[in-house]
Amino acid sequence: MRALSILGTSSNAGKSWVNTAFCALLRRKGLRVAPFKAQNMSNNSYVTLEGGEIGRAQAAQAEACGLRPIAEMNPVLLKPSGDSTSQVVLRGVPGPHVKAGNYYRDVEPLWAEVAAVLDGWKVRCDVLVLEGAGSPVELNLMDRDIVNLRPVEYLNGRWILVSDIERGGVFAQAIGTVNLMPPALQKRGLGLIVNKFRGDVRLFDGAAEYFARHIETPYLGVLPMQPALQPETEDGYSIQDAPSRSGVKIACICYPRISNSQDMHPWLMDAGVQVQWARKPQDLGGARAIVLPGSKNTVADLLWLREQGLDRAIRAAVQQGTPVVGICGGYQMLGEAISDPEGIAGNAGEVEGLGLLPLRTAYVAQKRVVQVQATFARKQWQAYEIHMGETHVQTPYQPLLQIEECGKAKPEGVRLGHVWGTYLHGFFEVAETRRALAEAAGIADYRPGVQDWQAYKDDLYGQMADLLEAHLDLEPVYRYVGL
Image 1: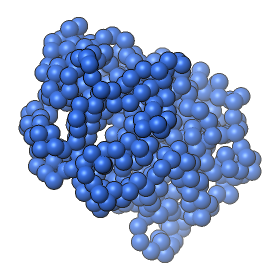
Image 2: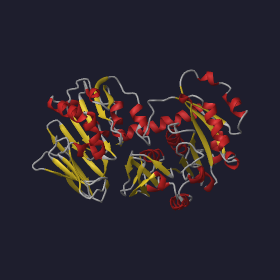
Image 3: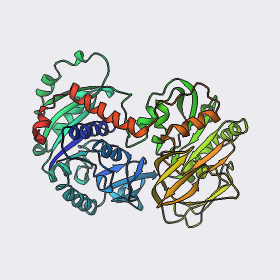
Image 4: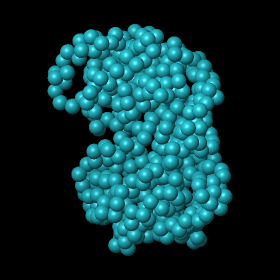
């Protein structure tokens, strides 16, 4: 097995994008390819068929490889819950919440888990495309870094370094990063990629010579900025920064601890609407629909809503006939109360909800992590739940949709007039749900841009692979993987 690691000069340099593109490209070349990220920090998680949690970026990379996502593609997932605290998900199984200082005090047990998973991959694929995290040369953390250079060394692999020219200082980024690596690991470099270039690429002529004066790592080329070619990301920043089409406003509440903001991604492809992220009451002005997404700390974000005055603004919008949709934590917020008698998610007690749906949620120790088949307006698709708490709805009520789990059908979610709530991530991945909300909001010019979300993503991965072939010198990569 060959190990090809995609490292970056910083967070958001484009590692996940380049990793996904290489997965698609090498698969197209006939190789058995799999993705891997030793440790991910993200509240954008995906649920595998077995009920394990991994980063959504690794799930997208698995799709690009033609594989079903499994927990071994992301053995350590850290889900920030605030105040330098994260929940540790190990091999897909949610574990305790730990402080950053305690986590980094002894990473060797976690490295042992990572190494065991890496050993398993050696006989399962031709090429393992690994993804780093942040920068590989954070000098204060390098001795405890289990995600960047240590896997490269363990697998006797090679690395590609991605730098972000949009941030400026691209030569300092790349040259500085390479020079701060241990000499033996510098020699494992296959190449440098300059990412997110805007404008006339001829302005970057001579880059190979500039890099060669300072480092031995070959220059592979420059990738242009491609805002339309964006798959799943490991955090919410890319989706929140992504350009939206022109049209009437759909507001999505952007809490401090927002999770799975990728649920809004399909709306970015549609005509007649634009997604705007709301952090204060004024941001809801003119919105034709409001979405409350998931949260890693629902109670804390509900209290934040109140501090901002967004609770009153949302209630006022509902009274004026504006449709509101709550997903996962947002669904819980729409109810009458959230109780945590044992202090499972924080301080014990009960918090009043927005009171827009006839339901109450109580936190329990067991987290629900499951894939389901959903049905809405006769359209079926795969979605998933990932949440703390059990929600009890006052009967009778109108369910929002139906789900099938382990062969058993049951109602899911609540629809009360123009207020909807569901636990399903992926709710907006079918055009039927988006069209129904647009109709409820009276958006006459709405046109769904993507009918089949999975087909759209498969085409996207192919276009990403095309971009690598069109703009990079891939000969060093092909030679390394045996092509």
